[in-house]
Image (cartoon, rainbow, N blue to C red; front, side, top):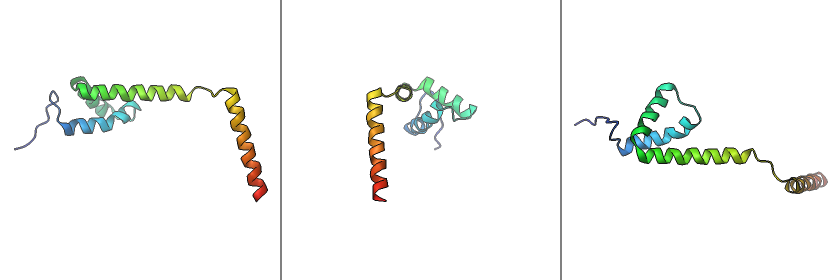
Length: 93
């Protein structure tokens, strides 16, 4: 008996495959055929759609956080620590 792929009733293996591809889908690293397959799967599989939404939200929060500048006081303390470490390294060499 052969297993036939039914897009309206995805198997656990189908979902595992699509969940692996979601990261690439979010980063626009899939070709158009794979993008279409992922979109079709997400349209018919609510659990995968929820996981996709979570991944997209996390990626958005991380991206937004990476654009924020550190407060000036923190930057100054970090620079001071870097200078101190540099001086200590030079003194030991």
